[in-house]
Image (cartoon, rainbow, N blue to C red; front, side):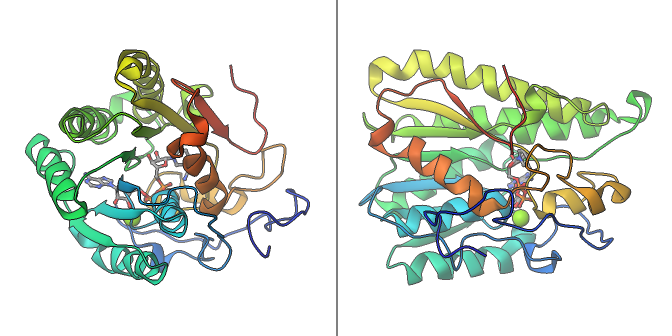
Length: 298
Ligand code: NAD
Ligand code: MG
């Protein structure tokens, strides 16, 4: 275990290569039941004022990557609105407490972003509660593997597209009226956009779409002073993987096939989001920042 994200050490051994025990939860699952526990940066993330006074809405902020981003943003000085599904209330409450113990405001907004109207309400509630909005992180996602296309139900395909692509569109569209020049929009894509797994046809499709959406919208919004970028994680140890994101037999060696030989931890994703949210990345637009343990991407 590292002291903080700046500690000089070997990235290969910064975290153990996990061999998680067999486990399964129904979607969306609870981070609190994931074994071993992922590192969300609770003990390690050290802020240095990079987002002082900023106001962020983060979807999927109760667990995994979104939770690590919420903790990091708060410690960098931002107030945070956390969106998540109602069944994830206990996870969200824990992250909100960490945000508050950093001295920042946390707003809890349970919702279902696969419904257009809920997306619009979510954005307005976040902006009202925070007194404005200048960071939007579209991070919530759905990943359910399916071995054969014939078995991929229309409803399942639709749900993945709605959660990963339509919701990003609806939320971003609703957010624009709140976002002043200087604001940052960050979307979570995946290495699956470039190296699609044969059992994640629908999911990989959405992640490629998120990349294209990011680049097109980044070019469109540049003249308004709003930057749009993406982060593309590789295999990261989160509850997404044990809620049918992967076949159970793949969990034990999750992430072992990366050049670093291990899965990433959510805490290792957060600095990429901080960089893209902060004005230090003022000349970075339409970029996808890969954090994937060394897998080459185009
Ligand atoms: P996670 O399960 O912790 O987070 C996903 C979150 O999405 C859930 O907590 C839930 O709150 C939210 N969500 C899903 N459906 C929703 C809905 N209908 N309404 C509202 N919220 C909904 O898992 P994670 O791995 O941290 O996933 C975060 C993002 O990272 C996702 O977009 C995922 O595709 C992406 N990603 C993950 C990995 C990985 O290996 N874990 C790799 C690449 C990309
Ligand atoms: Mg969750």
